[in-house]
Length: 360
Ligand SMILES: *[C@@H]1O[C@H](CO)[C@@H](O)[C@H](O)[C@H]1NC(C)=O
Ligand SMILES: *[C@@H]1O[C@H](CO)[C@@H](O)[C@H](O)[C@H]1NC(C)=O
Ligand SMILES: *[C@@H]1O[C@H](CO)[C@@H](O)[C@H](O)[C@H]1NC(C)=O
Ligand SMILES: *[C@@H]1O[C@H](CO)[C@@H](O)[C@H](O)[C@H]1NC(C)=O
Image (cartoon, helix red, strand yellow):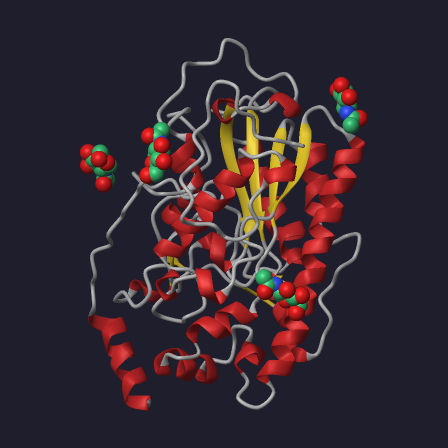
């Protein structure tokens, strides 16, 4: 076992694989809009001029290429599912560029990780020329989204001279909570208070015209179920007990997985409640939509190669591509019909001139 791990680390040092991108996004561009949307309830994909993201290591794109030479512990921000802007990347900005080639805000390229731990982030670690409006930080909890990530995003957006702050429609995607939920591993209860999505109110008050996706998350026991038959993964999870270690506990794992999954259910309920409160408020230029596309994914419909070959925990490039497709399809589907089953094999929904980014 140790030998295998050692071997992988040697690979980690020496390999230099060439990524294969298999973008199958097949939607075609639409005629320019005769009139920009006047309210958030009539927004179309073509209206989005700016993309922004909050999140943790997933949105930062941590270790997406798995064991990959010295870049193993890099963040591949240019390929991040919700905000990556590398050429031809299968990401939400990649899809939006079909309609708005000069989309602003997508993050680029890759670099060594930017890190938060516990309640603190390393100060000023963002690299604005590559991170652009991807405020995500590896290790971030919701409290970091509310403080450090919001601060970074606001500064970057407000000083960007290419943006018409008042009139441009902006898409903000939030996928977070994993680090809060993994706190459950230390016996602490994740914080689910009225303040946990404080960042939304700050955005609404200070950044005009935003459509927000808040993404519901899947049961974390799925990661254990999916990787438990790999010796490498099992050993990795036990030796590097930092990423939600209790899920992989050899003795009490089942008990912990149940606790963490129960908290996942509560976290998703919390997301839906926040989205519902904003729906009641019915703002004309701000909406928060709970996107449930990943939520009911199960070990049976998630392929093993959706995980990073480095830590068997973070999504791989393929995993990111699947997240992008599933949430894109959610955005273009009215609330009552959104898929929840991580249906990454469904065809892309291609917008017509009448398709909205649905707020209902
Ligand atoms: C895209 O591909 C899917 C499945 O391969 C197909 O069902 C769909 O019609 C295609 N859409 C367009 C616009 O070509
Ligand atoms: C992106 O795709 C186009 C069309 O398939 C291709 O011509 C171009 O070389 C690709 N660019 C990169 C950087 O891969
Ligand atoms: C929301 O406000 C719009 C006007 O901006 C109104 O037409 C619509 O009926 C309102 N919807 C709800 C559910 O209150
Ligand atoms: C996730 O875990 C909860 C709590 O155990 C359970 O009720 C739910 O059915 C699980 N969801 C899936 C998709 O397995």
